[in-house]
Length: 295
Image (cartoon, rainbow, N blue to C red; front, side):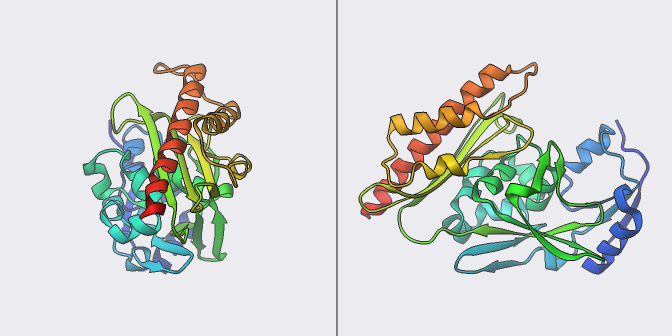
């Protein structure tokens, strides 16, 4: 199929892009990598009448490192993030999630902002953002800048808290300082690179005695948005992450999910996958953190 007719503009500055978004409203979409938007346009699931190319905006490619967070520009390529050794050390869950994102060819063009704004509930980067409660920075011509935590950003499938005149400009990822930090991302799909039937992610920090000091956990593909469970993660604090504890946390998280049914799997099987994957993620993260403490 072909996309519906549209007008193409190349933004020469962020102000130029924001002006076009303000002028055309919901008929206008920014585009950088196009790995989500273009297929939807080809199938006519999306029909913007105006596209604004933001690839030349260096301000949206910038990276800033602070002691407690890393800020990545919204059009940072996924492949660049994947190859960034320093980013892997400071925000390891990003690298874990990116292993499951599409294929090398799509990651070469796909951007962090495109994936987050697309808000596919099965996508990996939205789950990582939800689990870490990253902060999404939005700009508009008249409203200035506003910062939205990931816990409030994902509203429904393919729908976010960003309004029609706003452009995602950056994402702030929390950095966990100190020893004993580990993470894991697990997923099941029909084929590698396909949409996940279910996924699970966690990041933990263990004290020298092996007890959990800090934790965050979440599930993807089993509800209309990525799910994070801060209250369940809090129950891990001060305890060793054993197989029994991981199973309990995974079962309760899965019980709160609302998976759908399609030709690939029914809701019951997806909920079962959620239990298996979150348990596996917690145990793998705990196992990886223990040797790091001893080093």
